[in-house]
Length: 311
Image (cartoon, rainbow, N blue to C red):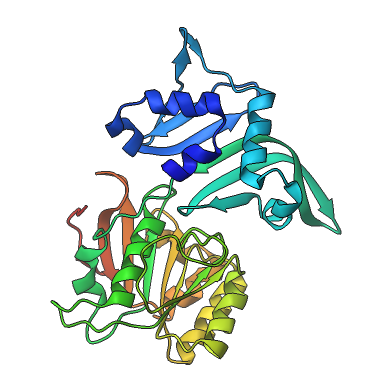
């Protein structure tokens, strides 16, 4: 949170510091919108903090402070980030941006007149993937999909599973593996200047801000990973790259948006992979007991092998 406080406008920073320590730990998002009330997501519930009995409304000057701090007073330094619509800051936290989009030849060139910021607080939960290990490892790591709706902890679970795969587990006699992360949205590793901000293990290589399909092929050709990790697959080219990687003898662990395995069968770009049995395990997540709740673990045929909810 200290890294986040450093880029916040002074007024917003004071508001955050008014929360109790337990509330600050539970903050998931800080949403700043010009001329609209400040919104803080705490334990998945929105809070609109008040000052002198009124909602705290963010001014245009405060938004300018935010941009200056993020860019270190040089918008040119953020040129590439502005094309993507987000900035990753120290600690792996991500600041989403919305405003006037500038396009060229049908592609986003930049975002100007930024009016909204969404600071997503990166949370590394060490050990959250531990309950999955006995289902995903059997002499080697199985090709796995982690499936769930937004904010069910897919990336957090994937991040911790990556750490376990790269570090190994001496107690369970699981050796460490070479893991290649294709981190298109800079969320898994949270790289800053190419350096991961999260604990991921010493045998991890990251392609940061790289398109998934292209990145998977780059990993296959140049980094000889045992396992490739990718967040939020869904395009036809992603499926093609996964097939290529599997045929090259590389294991895959990926996340996908969806409520259940039935959603995978309804998505044209993914159903072929699922029906062909490329993925040995499908882990369904929910928020029933908070982000990271394991709703079910299924084999490639869709048969449930575990349904007990685990945090």
